[in-house]
Length: 270
Image (cartoon, rainbow, N blue to C red; front, side, top):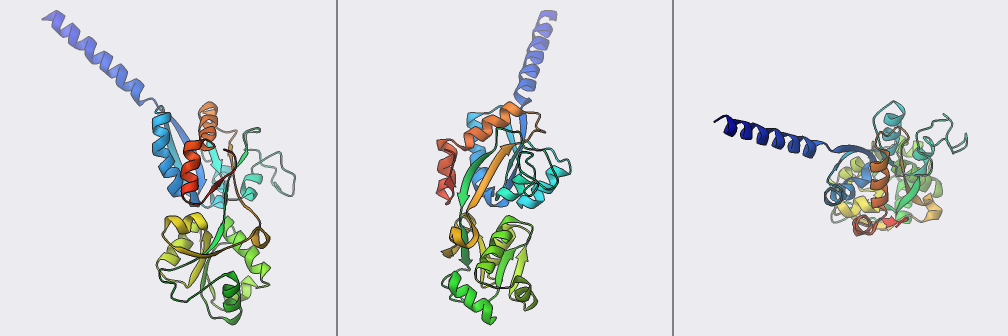
């Protein structure tokens, strides 16, 4: 009986040890622009097969909000921004104009330009207002005949929209005072306003229009708002540098690139 008990105890201890090992995963915290929600969620499942020892934990929000959270001490291993501006503000290798606070969070040698997106003019189902293009939108805004949803000034999609308005010599403050624009704190909020037909149109990313099943009647040229580049980097506050580097490398590989391309991103580092 004692032998049986001892064997059972040994087996229990062994199974407990195996269970403990199985549970010991590296938790990798990734801060990513809200426009990457769908693609990174799909990639999360794929990466679980490639690196089962790593658990990806995502924080999706506007790049400006994420940058502030990092600056204020949030745990983050990898940062992916929807524009260079927010990454520059955390990168000690950038000059004072780009990084006025002199912040030092980017692990040097890891920063890459990961993806390119497009800024799209999206309309609700059926396009009730019949908006045809950015030129058409500009004319209607000037005449006060359209309601546009755009991102706040502190988020990349809002900053790209401001450049588009400036391109057409439209004054955002005047448009806001006239009730011609509504705002969202990130691109998903703008997308929702369009999807719910709360506005006549919205300026979002082409990938968000695709993921939400919205029609994009036009996309902005680089001359209108510049290139929409998504930089990515491992942060120097990471406690899991090897795992963070490995995940960033995976994002440039063929499997992740195929996911990005499926919704309209253009991979830049594959």
